Each structure stands twice: as structure tokens, then as C-alpha cells.
Length: 114
Length: 382
Image (tube, rainbow over all chains, first blue to last red; front, side, top):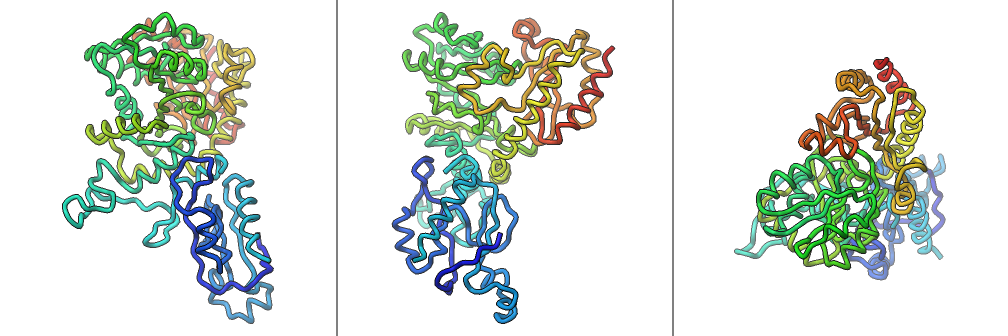
């Protein structure tokens, strides 16, 4: 799935937040969403809890990728822009988690945009 | 998070030193200390291992439990629970349990002075008459192995709670995808993680899950003192297997239903044991406490001879004749001589484990191939 990302341009090299407690499972989590939002206030990609920001695709776990700087970082800017992927494009490798958690994760991450 | 998401993500944090998305296999026996007793939370590999920790966190999340401990096998996990007992204590358990559990109870723990009552638990009321002042534990398997009886977990939990008994449920046959005994009042859930959790017939492991801190501490003390820990590579394999547990179970249930329904109408089959049939004794209980009916199906042939039963068991092309269950590949088992070989003939026949019984672990192959394979093997009978 290709998702045109309509927002401010991604510049920082992003990292994934750690698996956090959802409040239903008793697993030990450390980052509250408030903490991670604060920590990553200028990097809206980072608030994903289920999708991981990483190269590759096709695993059981959902991945999100920023083609312009990651998988297609070696394609010249003008070449990749000519075929339609600009800096605000994100690519999702949708995994086999529960789809409702994936949609909630997207919903939450997209709230970072004004 | 919902089940499928927990299966993939619970416990699986990216490695902090590299960002590796998959949990590394920490193949190490010991951990370097800065000063005696000053370490990073890991002292010695028997007691702690980061790969095992990740798996334990994952399994705890799947069973809606606070704590999980993994063991070198399902029997090691069962053994750890029994080690909490003292001579003179009594245990009430089912009359149709896994042969390995039966062997451990009767041949290892009875000589140490622990008494076991093997009771028909398809009616929880049968527990009451066996409770004495020495009763300490109720050990339940549901669905049972191999006759697929269903035990009412909530009803047993109520009895256990009223009498202050430790209530343990072996959840191996159902897997946490179908049934969560802690939510129904169990104190401890036991798994042979070798089966559905691992799911690929490539690893031996056991697990215990509980909520109470003091119970967890006791069990951890036993694990660490007795050295029944699993290895890091095995922990990784089970964790990897669990990532597809929800997908596999969905197909196991679908195929299990197809196979059970096919066999039910087969002229050479006398009985089909599968809790999904509306005429199964505890079908209503199964519907209440399980999300579906699983992939285990046992059959009794009309032909009573063990020779002909063996002939059928050896004639499959897709099903493999082997001990174990819960893997992606379909397995067929002859309980009387294989999984339940250590149960005396009169005891097993009383609960229906006869010489002409076969147990199927229906895998996730295409169900039409499985049915064709059964059709073909049953042609061996006249």
C-alpha cells in the first residue's frame, strides 16, 4: 500500500518507539504516550506503536518506510519525484496483526498533522 | 491490543543496541559483572536470559496473565507445579489426562507420598466427594487428551476458591487463542509450548502463567533451583512460532471442523470425539469458554482389531504417524500404544481410550487433501 503523506516534510532520521503497554495487557511497558509524544514532538512518524519504522517488507509485523530517505534513498530526487514519490510519501507493509489495532495506530499517528 | 497484535508485538521490543526488530538469541551462560553482585539484572543463564524474558512477556500477554515462566518441556513445567506439594497432600485431577502427566503423577509423585484422585470432571460436582483436609490442588485438562471431553473451568474455579485449593489448567489443546483459563478463575495455566504455541514441531518447551506474585516467586524459585530452564535458541523458536498463532489456529479450527464433519458420516467410524458437535456432552460449556473448537479430533473405528487400526494408521500420505500435536503438519497418533502407553489398559479403556482409537492433530494443509487422505486410509478396512 502506498500512502501519499500530506504534511510537513520528514527530515530527521526517525526511530521507532518501544512496545508500550496498551492498558489491557499486563505486559511491562515504559513509555506512556504522553512521554513519547513529548519526546518525539518534532517527529510525527515516531508515535507509531504497532507499525515499526524500518526498511524491508513482507514480515508478520507491520512496517512503515519513508521511501525518499530509506528504501529509495539512492534514487536521485528528480528521478523519484518524476514517478510520483515525493518527500511526503510513506509506504506501509501491512502485517498480520489485528487490523483494528493497525487502523487505530494510523489514526493516532495522523493526528500529529494539523 | 487485540490477540493477533499481541501475538506479534508483546515482549518484542527492538534491541536497544542495534534496533534489530527480532529479539536476538542471547546464547550465553553468564553475564559479566562490574563488581560482585553489580550487574545489569542478569546474573546467570539458568535464572535469566533476555530471549526467554521476551518470550515470557509475550506468553503472559496472550494468557492475560501477569507472569509467565518457560521451562525445558511441558513436563518440566508440570513438575515445577507439583514440586510445591508435600508428602500427604492430595490432588484431584481428570480421569482422561495426557499419559505423560499421568506417568509423572503416579510413578514419580505417588511414591513420594502424594495422593492423586482421577475423577470424571465432565461434571464439576464430581470433585466435591474427593475433597479432604489434605486436598491442595485441582489439575484440569480441557479439552482432554484424547477423548476431547470438556471441563467447566469456571465451575471448577468456584469449588477451588471455596476450599482454598490451587487450581491449575493445562491449556495445551486449546491454546490461548481459544481459551484463557486465568480469566475464568484458574490460578496457574500450564502449556506444552511444543504444541500450538511453537506450532512447527521443531522445539520442546513448557510454560506456566499466573497472576499472583507470591505464586510466581515460588515457581521461579523452583525453576532456578532445579534447572528446568529452556535454552535461548528454543525461546526464539517459540517466540517466532507464536507470531502466527492466530493465523494457524483459525485454520486449525476450520480444518478440524471439516475433518470432524466428514468422519462423523463415515460408515467405518464408530465415534468421533470433537467438542464442536451439538450432541457433544459439554458442547454448551465449550461454546461458553472457548472461541472455537480447535483442530484435535479423535476417532474410534468400528473395526475393533488393533492390527487393522495399525494398518489404517500406517496408510496415510499427508498425515504423519507421530507423537505430539499442534504443528502445521497433520499428525495421527495411536493413543493406546503411543501418547497414553504408560496408562494401564483397564484405566484407559474405562475412559474410552481403546485399541481401535486414533487421534488426529489436524494441521493447516488444504482440507481437501486431508479428507482425501483419510478416505484413502480408511479403505484399508473391510
